[in-house]
Every structure is written in structure tokens, then in C-alpha cells.
Image 1: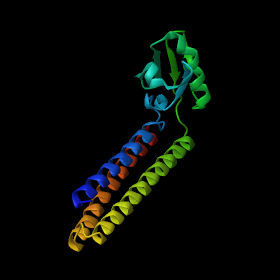
Image 2 (image 1 turned 135 degrees about the horizontal axis):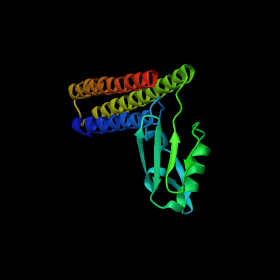
Image 3 (image 1 turned 45 degrees about the vertical axis):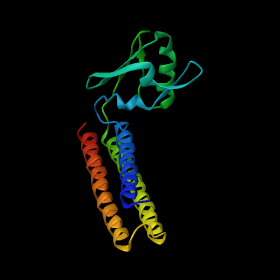
Image 4 (image 1 turned 45 degrees about the horizontal axis):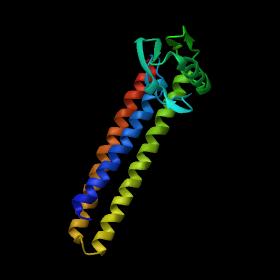
Length: 186
């Protein structure tokens, strides 16, 4: 692999790791209603588990309520079952066409638990970034051994990978801080 190929691979993988963190953080509750709270839920419809966002429109018209409008009203009961099975602390209310989820205020203790979860997810992302850095460094070393990279080029690739990890760890930290603030203020 060339130096550019190694760096491109490392950067793409780091971008994905931060993307996974963004998605995970979106599912963490704040005091406000957020459609991301039910994004990861799957309802058993048409014989297989399907993400709710594929079979219904999900919105938050008010700060304390999520509204789910199934595209097929026949799936309403299955969506309600999925919400109850997820044990998110929501009690779905349905009129047969629309499901409403009232979001209760979070206690200080629950908020602290949510912040702890944010920190866990962020640390998992940083570990993934470090593993990607290690893989990139190994690839650069093996390319140097195979004489496809010079020693100087290998050292430059390692330096560039280090710069990338600093950049992506910083992004992860910023995402976490913003989410922690939302959770505590909610």
C-alpha cells in the first residue's frame, strides 16, 4: 500500500467510528423529546424485525412528546409492543392511527446515569480509534519492510496517523460534551 492509501483507509475508518458514536449518542435520553430515542427500535412486522423509522414517520412536535405515525395503520400494535419491550420508560398511547409517547422529566440520578453512558460510549469510540491507529501503523511498518515505503515515508505516515487520531478524538470529546450538557440541562 502507498502512504496515501494507508492514510485514506485510516481516515475513512476513523470517520465511521465517530459516526457510530454520533448515532449512539442520539439514542441517549435528554429531558426533551427526541425522535432518536426510538430510532434503534425494531418492530416485528411482515414476518421480520423492521426499524420503526422505516415503517412510520417519527417526530417531536412538543418538547415532551414523540409522535409516531405508521405508514400502515395495521402495524400500530406491533410498534406499540416494540416500544413496551424496549423498556424505555414510555407508555405508548394510541388512537389506532397515531402513537404518542409522553416523555417524563428526568431525575438528577437518571441524568447522571445517562452522562455515565455518554462517557462509556465515548471511551468505546476512542478505543476503536486507537485500534485503527495501531492497524495503520502496522500497515505502514509492513509496507516499509516490503520496500514499498521508505523509512522516512513510514515515519511520515505514522505522524499523519497520529494527527488524524488527535482530530477524531477531539471530535468524539466535543460530541460527548455537547450531549452531556443536553442531558444535564434537558
